[in-house]
Image (cartoon, rainbow, N blue to C red; front, top):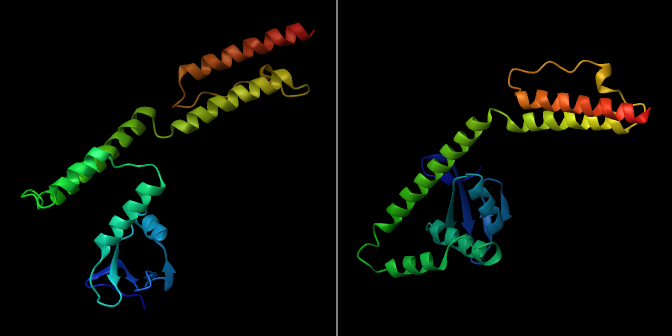
Length: 188
């Protein structure tokens, strides 16, 4: 059975062995730092324990993940920030920094969620559906104009506008119908 942290059944226990291998006790498999990075992005709560001593080394492993991300990918932490952070070690304010950084990150996440929601609300529930509908209308009109034997737009009535449809789409349909009429006249 998978080991969990005392009192928390959702925390996955990862054991780090002397040979630097990480063992996921829930899945009973060896994993890498990349796996831990992915678990972190997915919001999986885990705790890394030294297999020999049982001490919690989660902080060290998370720092190692950040170091690998910074060296392999696009750097997210600015040099000045890193310098300021290093200069805070041993400072009388050192004990306040972790709380300040946690609160700052929580505020950043909250603002990010609010911004995403405001953006979604401003565009309606599904802005991609509206764009897809407009693209399909233009594609149908273009295929009818340029492909012999294709159904002509004036042969069937345009679909009734949906409740969320704007006047722009209706105007676009009218313009495409007019272009189709002109193309038909040129073809005769």
